[in-house]
Length: 264
Length: 361
Image (cartoon, rainbow over all chains, first blue to last red; front, top):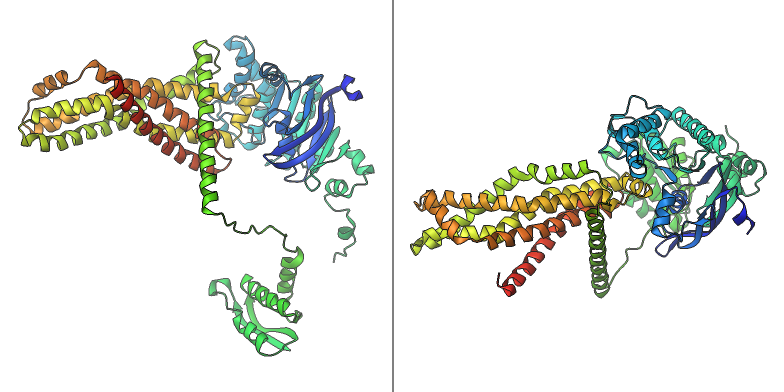
């Protein structure tokens, strides 16, 4: 495959099959994510978007197929290599997943302290900077339970970018946020991508978000248990002939039996 | 043609009238058509819609036409909505009938899988301990200290109460029999040996299983629900080091101390009975106790309590980490942690009894 030698490809998924025991969730997923782009994994509820993300970050193991980061296989990596690769990831979980027994600053300091030799004072400085980047200056000593859901997500983002990761993963960043907060989070994602030059992988089904941030996407379909489209969402909206993709991208408002039904 | 006349208020709070009467009417005459007259209907809610659903179902089964035009518009729309999506085939899970043998087999396999899981977890914990002893384990010292405080000093009141009462009860039961032989003073021997060898370690372990083991399961289970354990994993920090190790160390360090403490408190409980019931002097009781127990007796108790500490910590952490992702799953995990910890404690104590007997300790 020519993609192997393409230096612009950052993540390559090759024939991935995801299964829980004998239940196959998705099969034959093959796509690649280019360096520095915002890549969206989309699909209806229960189509396995979040599970795909869990595979990409090594929380689930593929039933078949392989995942590459650059030239390196993530799936077949030995534990040490895997750990080294993990250090280059930042993950923002759906609920933020902040450690509830630690303050925001301690949360951000944890990965920094693990993988750098900075003295405590400088660790604090760097962590405070990361919190300032997501607009949480002054909240360093708050516990996660003392701040709102949107702030928890931002703090989670600060922790995810603590080590200046090469890839940032977002699991449903707008879930549970009001439209304005989720819009600001989208802006923040784009801003960080531009300034850090990171590759961003987002799992979402929020159309507004998808059109606002995605350079490219993969569309998972629960019925056929595989991916049915890839490409830029705008391109898909303009040119896709697959009714399932069109339905999704237009919220089902374009499908013939709906649009032709006379309304009052 | 059957005309169903609906009258008065149809409210859920007033109860649901039976559709039997209509069914009977449908059965008696060879009706081809059913119509409704809602002229006297004063109020309706889901009660009416449910009733009509039953009637419609009957009509459909008998192939009778239904004219819905007599119904209020809202009722017609609700009926249409409930029929809009046909029943999903196979969604109703047929209650699976499993034979007795199959059930025995399934639970045996589940038991074996659970034992394997515990052994794997024990192995992981041992490796984490290895990393700890070479200084490569990734945990926060402050977490270890907090866990030590939580499993140590904070447990003192309850351990005091329980072991005092255990000593008291043992002495009381012993005193009643021994007094008949004029051997009341041997209450001291009985309480001292029983506390030091068995009851001190075991009662402490059971208290800690209920108090701390369940807390571990609930903490880790909740961290699992909120994806905190996933977050640790993707940061490259093994949850085994970060979460399980401090808890295991804390319990296995604090348990021997608590159990020695429980031994002494139990003996004090015995002394209270002896001085109160048997007219023995406190110093006399003390001398008798000192003569009755050896360092070996204490050592067996202390040795056991280290193992009990590890068992309580591991079963709590294991149940927490593998808990499902819901509130009830966390509760189940806490329950299972306590039950399995107590079972492990008793089984381990039995093994110790046999081993000590063979070794002649």
